[in-house]
Image 1 (cartoon, rainbow, N blue to C red):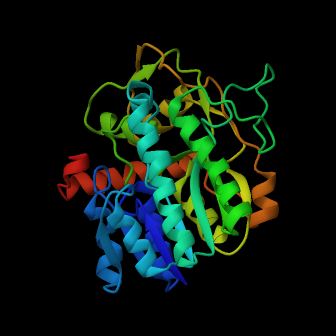
Image 2 (image 1 turned 120 degrees about the vertical axis):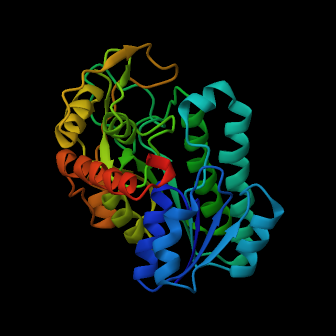
Amino acid sequence: MKVIVTGGAGFIGSHVVDALCRARCDVLVIDDFSTGRRENLAPAVAGHPELRVVEADIRSPEAAAVVEEFAPEVLVHFAAQMSVKVSMRDPRLDASVNVLGLLNLLEAARRSGCRKVVFASSGGTVYGAPGPDAAPRDETDPRVPQSFYGLTKSVSVDYLRLYREQYGTEYAALALGNVYGPRQDPYGEAGVVAIFAGRMLGGLPCVVNGDGLTTRDFVHVDDVVRAVTAALRTGHGLINIGTGTPTSVLDVHAAVALAVGSDDRPEFGPALTGEVRHVSLRVDRAGRELGWRARVGLDEGVATVVDWMRDARSRGLGAVA
C-alpha cells in the first residue's frame, strides 16, 4: 500500500511511520521539521532505506505536488499546529496551518485519486465542555470547541465529510485523547506526561496549571498506532480513540513520580485559557469500526516514557539532555 504520512517526523507520526515500514508499505513522509525531529525517523530510515522523506510546509505548492506525484492510496494527516495555547495567542496561524494546510493536501489527494484520508482530530478539544454529569463524550455529541485549536480540528472533520460527499474520498477522523509515549517533546507546550518526566529526571519542579483536578483521557502512542493502521483499511467518519477513563493531572504527576522514584511535589500556576475542564471519550465506535480498544494502562505507559527519556539522556540526545 502506498501511504503518505504528513508530520511523519513528529512524536505520533514517527511511530506510525515505523509501523507502516514494518508492514512493508510504500511510505513517503512530508514534514517541515518545525517541530518534528529527524532523529525520530532514524530507526525507520536505517531499517528501510527506500523510505522517502520530503521537507515541505503542508500549505505549500511543493507539498501538493509531492502528493500528486506520489499518488498515495491513503493519506495519513498528522501535520498540524497542535498547541491550544498557541491557537489562543495566534488564531490566524492556527487556521492557516490546520485548515488551509488540510485543504491544500485534500485537493492534491483528490486530483491524484487517493482512496482515503486518515486524519488526526482531537477528542480533547472538539466536543467542548461536557454536561453536568461529565459523561464520556460520544461521536454524536455536539461539537462546540472552546479553543481555536479545537475549532480548526472540528471544522476539518466537516471538510472531510464534504469531500467524501462531493468527490468520494473516504475518511476516518480519529478524535484522539491525550496521546503520550516515547519521543514526546518534554519542552513543548503540550504533553504533560513528557513534561513532568523530563523535569523530574532533571531534578526540576513540575508546574500544574490550575488545581490539578482537570481530567483527560490519556492514551498511549502504541494504542494510537494500532488505531491508525486499522483505519487504513476500515472505519469511516469521526471515531474516538481513548481509554474511556478520565485521569487528573495530579494522578499523572503521581504516576510519573512513581516511575521516576521521586518525592517531588508539584507547584501550582494559573489555569490555561481555552482548556476544557474534563474529558473522557466513549470508544464503542472504535470497537465496531476498527476492532480496536486501548491496551496500555497508565502506569505501564508512563514507565515507557521514563525509560525512553533515561536512555536518551544517557546517549546525550539534545531533546531530553
